[in-house]
Image (cartoon, rainbow, N blue to C red; front, side, top):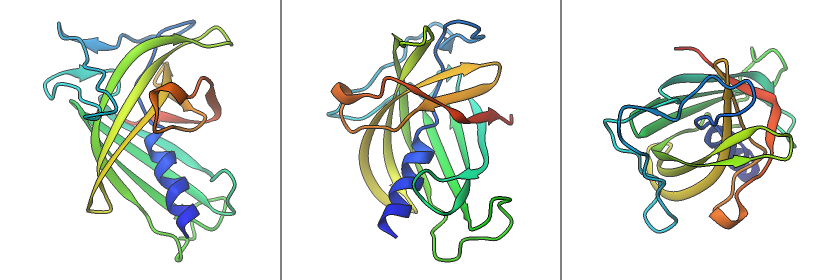
Length: 182
């Protein structure tokens, strides 16, 4: 059960904002402000009046949860400098039969976009720092560090997240991206 919660939390947090690069159609922000990249001491912070490329709702369609026997659908919404995520767990590959023993976790918090990172495949990803402040309605205080890349309203996230900027992922998961739904 702990593994289900950890896997679903990591899945939801791997939604982020975009980087530029080959074939990318984005800019980090609109407006004249520069994102605050946050740090490990106080968490990720983006000014609440700043619109980033993540603005809106993103959906990871029904698919298998890596290392598990169940499937899920992940939805993440970004508004200003905050995010909210929800994960629906299912026992079947069509995501029609709810997984009764697994929670359907929700989380929320703050995020910030950082520097661009040139990946070994030639794409330029963007650092994503998240600070989870709520998990299933309870107070949380977790900082996570990842990378993301957006191309034509498709959001690719890192293969995992870490709790240290020094161990930030350096590759993307192209197998199960998020799609902008609004």
